Image (tube, rainbow, N blue to C red; front, side, top):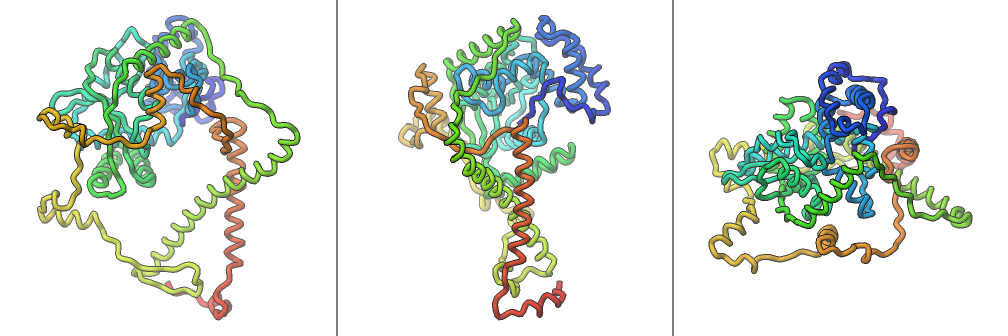
Length: 484
């Protein structure tokens, strides 16, 4: 999640070498921002914001920030919606949205944010190829078209099908298939953005990609190395999509809601007007009570153990993964894989045959075997149902519904105008802090360092104390060099 830092507090100790060139290049764009032209933000403040942003952002990131400053992005509107509906939104608060638009703060992407951006590009390219779509080029330019509605500001992916339909696509990774409330808001904002730019949207789909995190890491880390590396990552992704059994691409059609369109318009327009009129929103005070001295006395020691155990669990998991890889790498140097015995009988070295799927598929392709014989068929259920309906087939008898989905229930209540809070009930929830910046985060980082060191020390100590089988004389083997 990107870090939002006050403009005056940005660390400028390691500025981008060409920041002055960037600041000069984008100066006029910043001075033409609506909040600057209206006088809400002074030209001096705008130039200061640009100067600091150019020193810590890449050119593409700076360009994206300037564009985002023209109005509210879908994330901004989600935060404003949460504020108006008294909901919690983890990414940032409405007050931070106001601070960003006033150019009082800069949103600095993390390495994870950069990986998410390149993953979006990779999977957009995959989906475009997989479903024979074409990018509606004008849609990418639509975001720069001047509109009466600066409060809707988005960068949607509008694609054209073989039949000439314009479809909006959005992509999520390793998430539940059902569209959540946040997804609904994002998709509706993107549709509004296109409609306000006079673009036609025939339908919208959300693609949900299920893929192991380690594969996402390989794709993003490689693709970030440059254009050639991006192409290599895309080629690898296409192979995985065809042959990998642990990757799946699903999609769900987005259902439009006139009520939600109206609610989003009201929320965003009201806040944009407030913003330009110099109004502010404040961070709400937490409705919480302080523990009594007696409660604190009982809570503190258990809470400390909880915090320590939680961090130890995380650190131990990381250490196990590291040692697991270390021992696998070591055994791989022992020659041809085979079952091996060691006097240390708590850890076994086995051997198994692993089917090389990629090599086998390459063989079948070279042999001109029809892929239908060795690939799984995937059907576009929505299109199939639409085609069947057009030919008079009653598809209702094939339709079934899963268990109620919380986010869809909430969205339905909102469409009906029902206050969801009447269904709330009070309950305590114990969790580790989710702070990602500030003093609490610094202490969490310090605790992680301590627990990692403790885990490593504990593993070393325990390892030294693990005994060999009673019949084995330790001295016989500690003095003999192992054969590699």
